[in-house]
Length: 187
Image 1: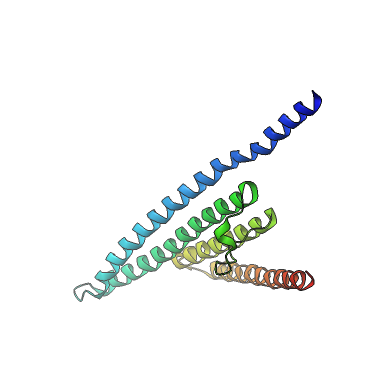
Image 2: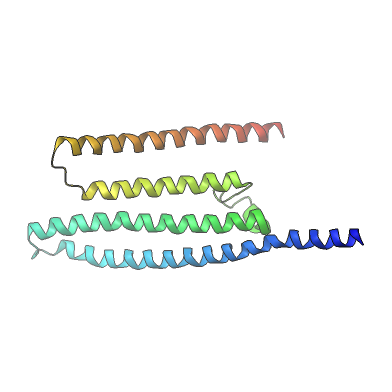
């Protein structure tokens, strides 16, 4: 009796992982929606950029169009990065909790999406989130009107912090790659 109850409980417990499918499907749908919205934004930006070569536009309007186009382009990069996070998250959850994605194990497929653990998923998401933060900082710094030395100093400190964050991420990646190569060599 106890063995049947234990077996039934373990069956239920093991299959409860399938609830993660809701997060996988929702993340995938939101990723597709963000890809769509960002692509529409990119299309509108391309249409607006076509006006850039119009000789009847005065210099002030041309500068304003240029500034809007650059800011919009940065916003598009931000949108695609967000959609990528959601896609990586959906695939990572699926591989960790449901099943390995067979086609992903193909030798020709990208190793970027190869998720072996929650730490791998966290690492990949963290890198893309850092990219979004860098892009957002860039977008805000483009719009910033520097009016005094203090604002210029804050901007410089912000740029230095972004550079340090990117350096540390790159350094961590190099260390992680060396560990993986060492593990593969010893295996």
